[in-house]
Length: 617
Image (cartoon, rainbow, N blue to C red; front, side, top):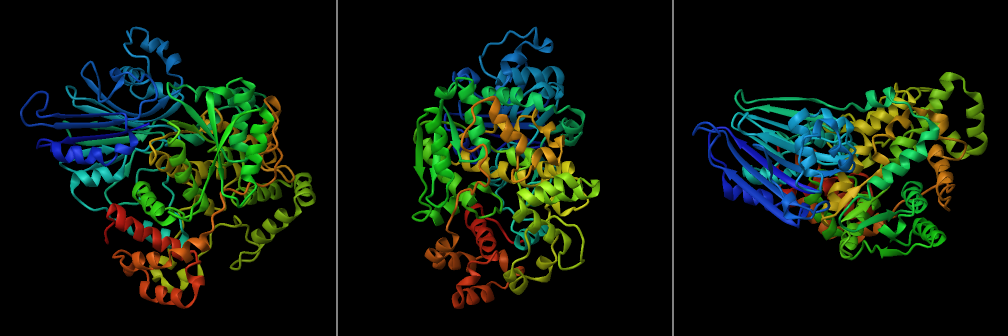
């Protein structure tokens, strides 16, 4: 995992000092090497275009400086962030048969593949990536991201320059400007508490775009024109690829073992849930557990750490337990998270815990860490988001046997879900997705009409979706993107690469295995639970409810009330949409306002103002 920055100026040379400042702002993404180059003239004339390349390297494969970037081959320059897990296999691909490789890593494989086939060979690559490859002589550049968008790649484009970057802050550092949120994104966040990164090119900021997950961007310098498209479409892949239950263990084994390829130490985050402990189970069955350092987070507020400890004890594996304090530095940590997240985010125990976990892991010189991200979205882990779609589809199909099983074996959640689906308070007996976030009482009281009327970007508000379509939508443009964004930034705060075996593209076709394979009586992720039997059954296999990192939010607001009030009062962005003075006066009189859903939203916007310079529109 690394950080890249590239600028193409149309008519004037790249400013080396600003390029250096931009690259320095992402030094956390690559502490092992820095590459910075400026091309003062275009390839054929003195008029341009002009090029600037910057790269910060976190060395994971082929630690030799020969794999440092910018990486040059045959007149092309590659800037790349990520890992291609099957790079050794790709070396033997017929399209690369004539290549005399001079390195032992994946960077050279990628640059040769792009030079010969464009994005075509990406279909056969397993990994995560964001890259830009530039052909100065040919006057072209091509950029692309991996299937789920694990690696970020933003861009800015106008009549004079094209900038690519792994971070948003670096772009504004070079431009000498401050970011401004799109009005609709700001309204949606204040109203609903989340704005998902989405599966398209727009971001939450004006003038900043992203290469879409599974997308590409081609740049024609002569005509100063960009073309965007998709080399991978998740829905098409899911529906076109068979998903056989018997294949699941083999795919899981390959997904896990391939992500252990590293020339540095590798760790595993054990959360005490199904997903990460299944990864551990696969490792143990393959005899690879000694290659991995296990880390368990302990908050003392749930049974998660207890279950994680039971698993490593059963397998005879040593694990390091990280005590998560939250309280002593939580406000300062929150501000650092704002700086690195660069986007409003839900202020939850999980987000606060993970930045602290990665920081502690970094002290053990473990720069690669696996986790269980993706299991909930692909295999049906959300009772609040996916179960309502399962029930509705079963009702439509008349699947009374499955419904009776749910009613008898999981009665509390089943009947609660059914009640919420049957009556949403507006249109009786309208089938809706239960438990989606509702506006806060404080939003109704203190926010402007444009906020109260803001629509949610949550794709699961579309209640016409079928069960499989809901899973795909949530993975393409919903909650999965939010977790991926947070994981990347939280890990990179500590210069750690995050890998997620359950996001292997060969597992995504299991989205269409049906609601009965996902939810079975009291169990969610049922087919994933059954997969333990092919490896090493563990205490988490039939654990009903994982609690997640529990965080005492009330204590956070109580201990930091003065600092929170001060930063919110200083906001220049909020007053156009929120009666800030009225909210703070109410919060002083009644602490319940600080505990409302609106409070962390105001705090996050104010935090972004203070850290990344978010500016009023």
